[in-house]
Image 1 (cartoon, rainbow, N blue to C red):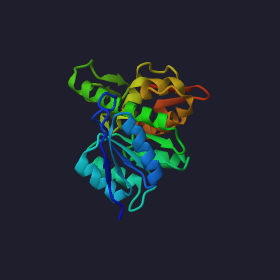
Image 2 (cartoon, helix red, strand yellow; image 1 turned 90 degrees about the vertical axis):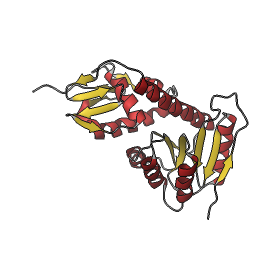
Image 3 (cartoon, one colour; image 1 turned 135 degrees about the vertical axis):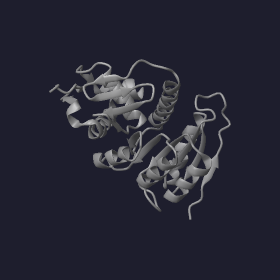
Image 4 (cartoon, rainbow, N blue to C red; image 1 turned 90 degrees about the horizontal axis):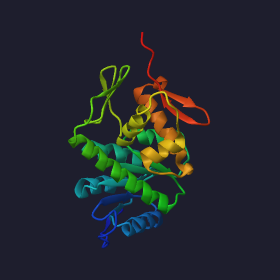
Length: 246
């Protein structure tokens, strides 16, 4: 069966120093290229080439982030994501060879935080990894630092300190990315934010080529909090609506 290979970076002064990233990709050429780029960014990298090896590596090595291909031998990346997230929450950047929005939404639904469609640039992948790790750091800081009262928009409640969301008094589970996206929209209710604005503020990524990522996350968010709460302004972007009071 496929073996797991571990590579430790010697670069200690780079932004990713000491952060552990598990790369799960059955194409060894792609896996090696991703690992090389992340090593250059200062990360410690471990690679796995099939589903069972990925789950075992995640359990034993405790990575701080997964770069995870959807199509894998053994069982696919969606199942890997489910099993890893059941062990402990960890940010996941999913890779897919198919530009299929359904696959992307399923990936986001099982706990992935972001996705990229092949082919992709290593520069963008490295940037997305840094962004996801910064988001985890912000979430940790927010959980330990007191903030203002819970924001209430109709029956939608956003608790910044606990990073919890409730709809009609029921808890709604959001990924860290979905939570940050909702907070961004909730900062100016009813105001339209462009896809480029959302991409820059939530993902720290200013390249317009990533706006489909915004669209897919909006769709996933709508499924969880209610489609009527997020208004699409065609050709512009999105706005968070407050429901009309009865």
